[in-house]
Length: 129
Image (cartoon, rainbow, N blue to C red; front, side, top):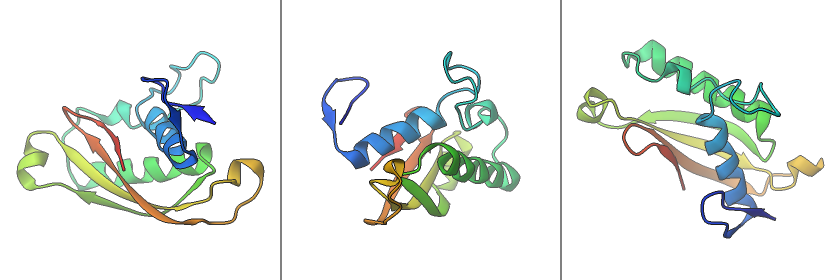
């Protein structure tokens, strides 16, 4: 069982995996003392001009980070989203479709189902169900 890092409330296995992805995506590489290599490299790209090449790089980094660090998810598809006005204001959104494998961290790769969660960069950044 895992716990919410801000409230201390117990989390389901899926919520725990989402929390892990959020920590992974919003951690600078080298910022965790006991695991310096943890991170996705996304924070290092924030503040750059949003264009197609940056979106491609962000999606590649997201998929690679989940593949390396969160065995309960296997990425199927990442879709950029948001309106033109949101992009002009520096808000980027992504929908991440994954196969949820609740026991993969224990060596059982069986898939429970396909789920989609959101990722948002901007004033209210985070991972959403």
